[in-house]
Length: 248
Image 1: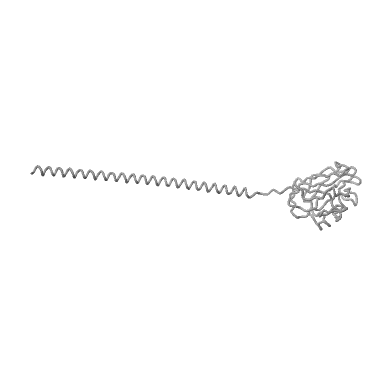
Image 2: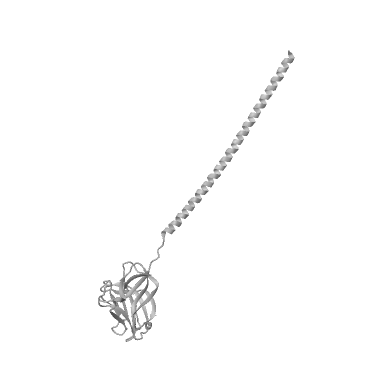
């Protein structure tokens, strides 16, 4: 969880009383700038007056007006926090945190308004929100709700907005996986090709060996026949010579 925007409680010099009776607000908040994170929680500087009824809930709204001068919420709430019991506050200021169960993307550079509402408070039993109306220096400005939204360019609410980084999909692992698959496929193809080549070579060698063996056998047979013919001719010459000798 990381800080998105804030205005420290050390700047607190006055307050907005959320009482709800005529001309008193039931909501108060501050405009701020998103930074690309998912909204996770907000803190306000709060205490109670008397025994306020009902719950406190934080809301995120879209922004309308001039940021820092006339910022106000507009439209329906973009995100809603958990609710806390108003009477559980103490009579001393404390930073009270409200969490958003469903993260909302705060677009980088976009203006928003974060508010706290206590719809069931009553006269003399309210929620007190710490603000700075002496020398406010936050870029935004405060706003409050009395029958309709209004703003004050000379107030800043003490608040902290937190967010979490938006998960990013890594393309490197996908690329690596694809590369590995491709490499494996190439290796398999190469291995298959090598095996085929080896089989072909072996077959060729066997064929060559068989052919050589056949040629050698044929050559040997020819040589033997030639020797036999030569021997027969020699025997015939000897017989002819014996016949001549007998005649003489």
